[in-house]
Length: 230
Image 1 (spheres, rainbow, N blue to C red):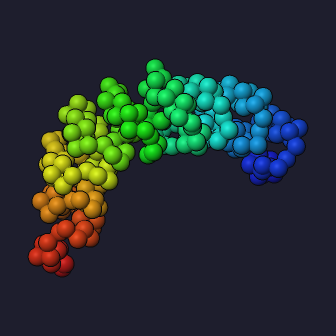
Image 2: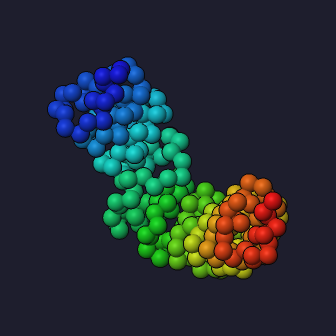
Image 3: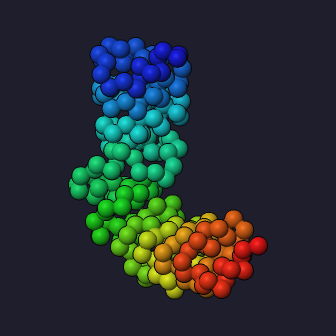
């Protein structure tokens, strides 16, 4: 295995070698091979049917995986909220197809892009599925009204991601800091946000896990920071 694993990631081997590696008994070797952009369509289809989740997940990160294969993988493989290479390079037509997918996981994966056309971005912001909204919430260009509507509709499930939006308004960050029930992950985002205000940062100081980030934010008044020094 120690010899096969390094071979599985090499992009310059004959197709026959990749076929032999695809028959390797170790799922780790086949997962590494699945992520290799040098493998052909036949191997891609074969690996997409692998019973091991790690192999299918590796294929999802392959920049050459066909979108049809990728959308099938999304329904059977735990990929998580991350921007996949193939989705990052999707064309405008492909973006529209992904946005119209009936599978919310596919829409969630698309929502990880930060350069979506405004109409696609807004459509995903209005999605009824919270995981889609979580992925789109940090997208630049979303209005204050959109961000507030997300929180009103989905509550604690999206608060932290809304706080992560680079254009979140100071007043919104204050409201998110005081959200009931409190969302600790949101406080972490607010503490280091450039738009955070002193009132929002004061709330962050109540959580020992984010005190350091809040104290480093220049919006925190000097009189407050001096009380934090022993």
